[in-house]
Image (cartoon, rainbow, N blue to C red):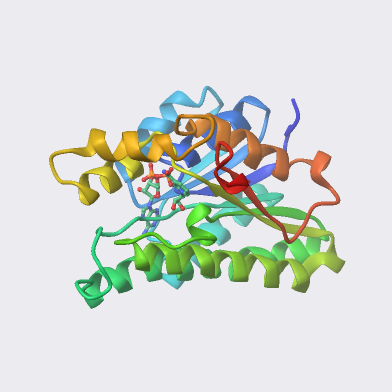
Amino acid sequence: MEFKDKVAIITGAANGIGEAVAKMLAKEGAKLTLVDIDEDGLNRLSGELGIAEENYIISPTDVSKEEQVSSYVNKTIDKFGRIDIFVNNAGVEGKVQSIIDTSSDNLDFVLDINIKGVYYGLKYVLPTMIEQKYGSIINTSSVAGFIGAPGLAPYIASKHAVLGITKTAALEVASYGIRVNAVCPGPVDNRMMRSIEEGAAPGHPEDVKQAFEKDIPIGRYATNEEVADLICFLASDKAQYLTGVSYRIDGGMGAK
Ligand SMILES: NC(=O)c1ccc[n+]([C@@H]2O[C@H](COP(=O)([O-])OP(=O)(O)OC[C@H]3O[C@@H](n4cnc5c(N)ncnc54)[C@H](O)[C@@H]3O)[C@@H](O)[C@H]2O)c1
């Protein structure tokens, strides 16, 4: 059990990549705080973890609200007394719209969750890790952190921001034995890509998927579990000398 008795907080835990991470960490013995705005999803997941109730907390949370972020961190400390792993992963894609057509509501929605949610998470988790002189943090960025994509400017901006925040946090806390890295997936075969495909070509999502897949040297999207494997590696003590780095997991897209 690689993560026996390690305490992990996972945001965006109810679905997709976060759900896959939660299941892997649970299987490997970790104690979990599962954070998501989707309360039904958290309840469903908790029934599928296969671990005793005393070993997890579910925390329905909007990560863009600072007081709610401080609350999931406090609940974790009250229950488990420490935080070893923080998977700072919740995110949204927003609407597919050109910069000209983007409403300020859509811009705020994406930036508030994807940037402020990640930032507040660090702000409230780091003091505990500094006290412990131990911790591994994985922020979920994207290949959208490196490139542009027409119609997705708020998302692209937010994922670039996550890389800057990751590097800065890594530098601020390296001397305390805390590592901060980012994972940067290409398209993953889950709800978020279904939404982007439908937004890019309403009524013809399959065409968009095929076009994306043509651009990926391995020829297919990643699975949630493949991304979760990378996150769990970075969370583990096998990655002790890795910090401040942004890891692409993109089926070879970055080689082009
Ligand atoms: N799916 C992809 O192709 C892809 C590619 C690269 C990066 N990512 C990133 O991976 C991360 C996880 O996304 P996913 O692919 O699992 O998609 P997903 O939509 O399945 O999961 C995102 C989770 O975040 C939760 N969430 C949304 N808004 C929230 C909020 N305000 N507060 C708390 N939780 C909230 C959702 O309820 C959901 O459970 C995101 O940061 C996403 O940007 C996804």
